[in-house]
Length: 239
Image (cartoon, rainbow, N blue to C red; front, side):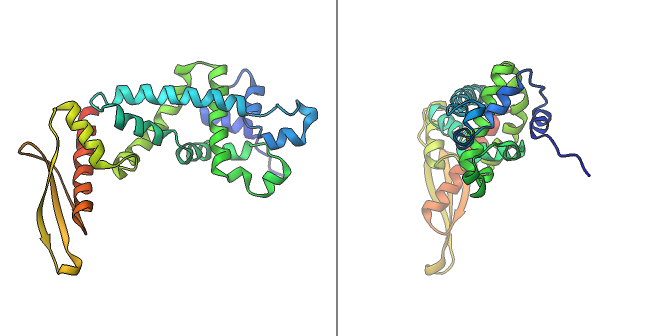
């Protein structure tokens, strides 16, 4: 018979950190529904919400400080939207899956039967709680040293997809903060039949073309041009 894997051990291996306070990690993985059904283990309040509160604040600070250093040219608006994307439920739930937190979640019977171990909100809450526990068991530097490689990979996807903001607004904020110039858009081509034209747009700072994009209408083409310009600007600032 194969040995059943200890989920707490697996999570510690994924984080490359041996908890000295393993009870903190167990608490971080305890959903309120479990506490309600197992009062003898610690009472109604023996669940991960306090650690979730702490971990949320720790992640907000660490990600904000990282973005501030990584993108010195970006103004407050795009930085705020980038941070919001990096610590949103969808992103943190994926990190939780990568760390296999779902396998260690302690859930009440009803929550378990309804797929609670895969519910994004539960996974996000667990991730934040584990970060809170990790911080209490170590320090900010140790926590970020384990999480930074994951966030570094994730932000490349976000930048490629420009999934964190409206590109035209973000590029205008960047351009005005960096150069004091408001971007100008122009349509340089419109080809195809009237009912199915394809437009090509360029975005310029004064006379210099910063990006070019194609779309089925002028607005989409301009957004694509702004995306290219913003991605170029962000990567130049981080290199």
